[in-house]
Amino acid sequence: MKSYKTKILICVLNVMLILGLTNCANNTDTLDNKFSPLAVSLKDIGFIDTSNTKATRTLDNGYTTTFTNGDKIGLFIVDGSGNVTTRNLCLTYDGTNWNYPAGTMVYYDNTSTTKYFAYYPYQSTAPTISTTTTSASDFFSTAIANWGANLSTDQSTYAKYAAADLMVGAGSVGTLSSNATRPLMFSMNHQMGLVEINMPYYYLSTDANYKYIPGLAWTSFIPYNISGTTYHYIIKPSTSITISGKYAPLIAGGSFENFSQITNVAPGTYQTMNVDGGAVGTSHTLAVGDYYINDGSIIPNATTNKYLLDKTIGVIFSTSTSATDKEHGWTHGYAMALKNAATSVTWGALIDTPLANIQTTTSWTLLSSNKEGYAETQTIKNKYNLSDYPAFNAALNYPTTTPNNSSKWFLPSCGQWYDIFVNLGGMTATPTAWGNYSLVSTSWVRWSPGDGGSTDYGAIAATNINNYLSTLINYGYTVDKIINNSQNSSDKTVSYWCSSEIDNNQGFDAHLYNEAGVGDGNGMEMKSVVHPVRAVIAF
Image (cartoon, rainbow, N blue to C red; front, top):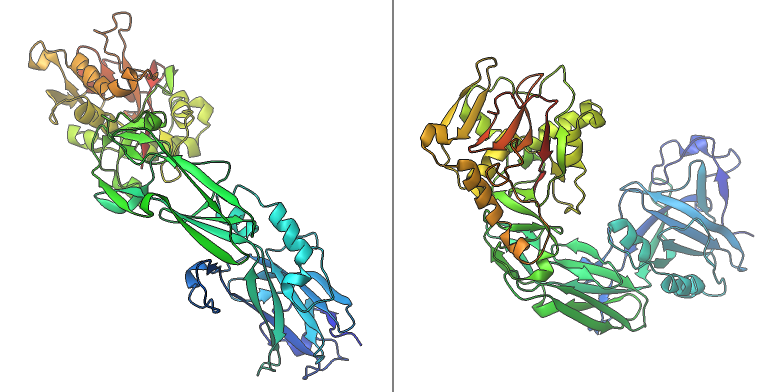
């Protein structure tokens, strides 16, 4: 006699809830000891330290899998005669229960010779099995061998990492519960090996949670960053595997350091690899002029580490962010791109509804405090056809790799350009002149020789900003210098677009003539005028 009974029910059943089961069951069946629904539960035994000689694994709670909503397992049931009565039945986790496919239920028929096997993660193509054993590892032996031979080297995300982590288990049926179900419990054992890699790191003195490993690169594989600067990588067990990579242990000087270790672990065990002492942190104080690189690392402007300079994407011009950007998680600062995103484009089409709170700004201090370039750029992106706004389109599509925990590139606001002039350009926090246009109620700021002698503030600002790029220039990297018209007599309209607008017809620009300023271009802010674009990023 077969040891299970599969019923296609009239209604959709939740395996862990008895409410409605008697109404949904076939009238010829009774929910007694012989025909009780099986409620599946899983427990991950966890990886055990390869150096741990204890028989128990209960201490390895940090190396167990926490199943999440949407995870799937495959269920097999074999009767006492070796017949597979249920093959690769998919059960899905909802965060609490493992649920059978809609309209399906597996019952217990009180036969002790029935065997239950499960594996995770589920595969739509049923794995090859052996029915002549009671051990889950033997039952799935062929599948385990094939799994190890075909492991992905890209385990960079949780989904990819989980897909590599094969677990199998044999189930045991518990006693009849008060809700007339019987628990079918699986203790899942990992069949692959695990390498844990702990890396030394830097962190910001103002935020110990902002950790980075300068220039970290893996050789021929990508592990999963499970937390902080700890990485996990699933490997084929009982096989010598080389774990290698490189990084820069010194952010101020030197080059990079290669690291490598051969590991060989048994199924279900893990080995720890501590690179240069493991997860030890070194503090760095963020400063204007630091370089921001493509993995989120921050290095001093005066660095001689060419390995890190190769990865630089911006110069930090502010060590604070707007309240809006803080809500996004970008709490540390802003960086200016090394090159122009465009050299000669218009701000864009006229818009009916000006960007919030910009056109009514009547104080230069309010203008300088507007750090909402990201929000303004997103407004254009989300409400209008981006191709009609070339300056915004250029900034958003500035072609460099950016860290995951950043805003990505956007067009800077008037206040962010003010910060570039003050923090990188060396202009005083209080401009030499400010005021309103005669035709529109909008402020402007400038550092002008007409208001303070014959000083060429534009040339000073450009020179000072470019000094922060000098390390890159000296090492032969191509950057676009900030140009003042006195430095380039052929360019009399040296202005950069801001995301902020003055009114429906005009947008703010940041300009460097014989003065430096934001918003005062003698009519040159008409949105149809062409200017270069320099993108910025929040982190």
